[in-house]
Length: 219
Image (cartoon, rainbow, N blue to C red; front, top):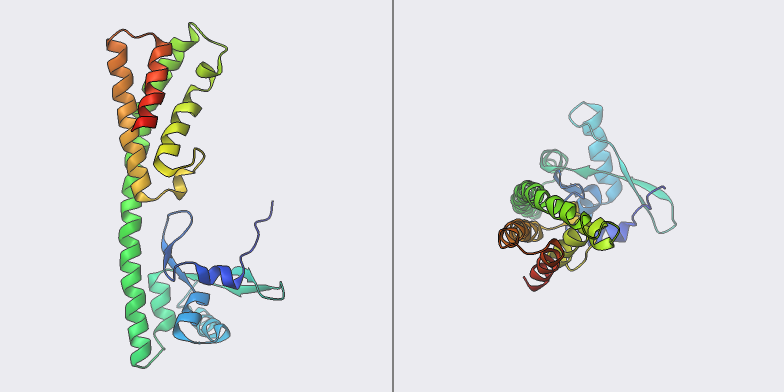
């Protein structure tokens, strides 16, 4: 399925400096730069093209739809690429705008680092929690092997965790905030500890399942 291209208005609704959708880098766009610096987008593109022609910039275009529904080229830029493009913008106002962008890059790069650290923690806690969930599913299979409470155990527990952290059970972890990922990690640690504790207390697997789900919802 072909992804729907954004409109120029939609591009301008995004923060002028933002973390990309894959949480790999912090970017701005030529559309945002033109709007913020009060320049024609075509002039910003011309500046970028000139840099590309002399080998100072290598970047692939992205596309948006204009008001007539026609595909138009724009570029997403990281910090270094942004600085190259705006280097020629002069005047006290332009200098202030450059400072504004650099400050936003700093803020977003800090947030991206926090997100990436949270994602690593969540991956680790998920593994440990899933080890316990796998044990519980095997125990449930001894008494209710065809029940959805057994078959869908991973989905039910991880869905409950995700819903508690984000408000929706189907939120993709790559789109979660650093705070949401931290909440996921905390809940998964509680799940791991709770299953182990209830097992030591000798509770039947069915009861452990209900207790774990209830604990997540009450957290």
